[in-house]
Length: 139
Image: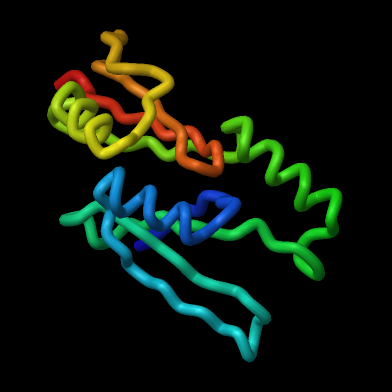
């Protein structure tokens, strides 16, 4: 059997991303490991929702040389800032309550809860620009 373990988001600053995803969104740190000797300043940083231990989000710093040349790095950073480098889809049983909770913690929604054919949908972006959808699906 094959299972999804994690997905990644490009982030401009791992510390800023970590604070956002833990303090504001309510995720927990899963892994935070640096490999300075073997891989320069590479840091493997993952977060995930409490109670769902088998899935995590990798908060991946946009790398430079030798992984990405300067032009590619800039393109990735620009696409991320515009919200087009990836989207995280989250679900909840009560979008309105979660919207109020996260707004109180400082999450700035670009799309408040809205009734859609599939349920109640909302959206916000992380500090790097990544799109996040929070949805309460119809039964």
